Amino acid sequence: MLAFVLWPATAAAEDRVTVRGNYYREVSTRVLQPTVDVTVDVPDERLTLGATYVLDAVTSASIATGTTEVTGGDNTFTEIRHETAAYAQSKLGQWGLGGFFRYSTETDYRSRSLGISGQRELLQRTVTLSLSYAYNFDRFDRIQANTGARLPWCGGSQDIASCSGSGVGLGTNLVQTHYVAAGYTHVLHKHVLGLLTAETAVVRGPQDNPYRGAQLLVTYETHPVRRTRFAVAPGVRWILPKANLVLEPRYRFYKDSWDISAHAPELRVHYRFAKHFRARARYRYYRQSAAFFWRDDGNFAEPTGLCSQDTVENCATADPKLDAWDSHTPGIQLVYELDGLATRNGLRWLDQGWISATYNHVFQSTRFGQARLGALAFSLAY
Image (cartoon, rainbow, N blue to C red; front, side):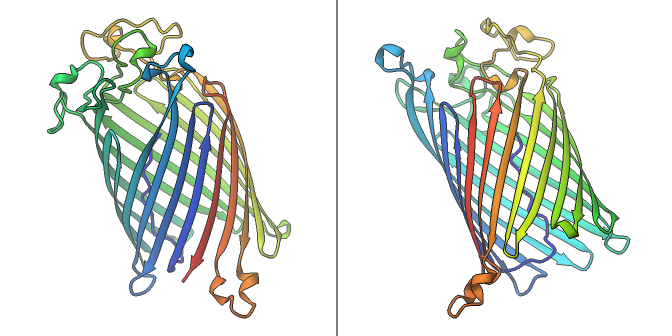
């Protein structure tokens, strides 16, 4: 999945600090992710600067460590990922501009991203056009289990001893991604907003997992070194003022050069059930086809060259997300706006603040089984 965030200009920027705690749990993986985001207007809402810090603590069970049932089953290990980002956004009349830089590092990879975005309001602000571009460049390594040494990873078809940790192209551990997104919003009625987003990404470089070969009876997993992705997502926001309700149906279609196609309809319902309380319920269904090189029997041979559609015999994968699968995701979010408390003596600093709790449960047909996603957030304007 793409992880680019372009931070487009907002309609009403303000000085704000937001703290989030995210939690993800499935059968063999647990992720704890605290996040801090700070924005400030310099000198006013025409220019907003922001910074974000994210910490990922990922605990997984891995059969690739060589642990067997005789010794107690899968071994668990925890990896820590640090991510920092800086961004700027500006609202000048009917124009909005933005840009960001992000750096992320973990034990066996380093990632850098930069991007720009722009938007233009037309027809008395009833139409908004937006365009975003991001460039992501990552370097991946493989930690050798027997020595703990970190060696550059160029993919399963490349001899790890001859892989280069510098340079560009085949024979290097560089993964490059060019991402472009275009958006269109249109006020169709005073209570109806139409939405349309189209995005594409071109990925070049090693995209296989250096630790999953043991599950295939081959040395390493081997994926194509090229992948082109495309997605289109229409949607509608329909406001029902008398019912304090917003209906938001969405749909996303995805297609890529690995022959994976996916459909993802979703419905979100926003409801204000009290003066300072609002809720959001959602349901998402996701269904995809398998990659052209997926084999249900897992009977792959050792590759003798690059994996591609013309050389399927050189491909090998143990990633269940490349098989055909589907999922159902219901979720709920509750938000309490702190304005009500801000009217009391000594609590005015809570004005425009809010707290939220979010929970989503994923029922998926892959071997990962069910997944639970939770988040708590606290935001204050200052």
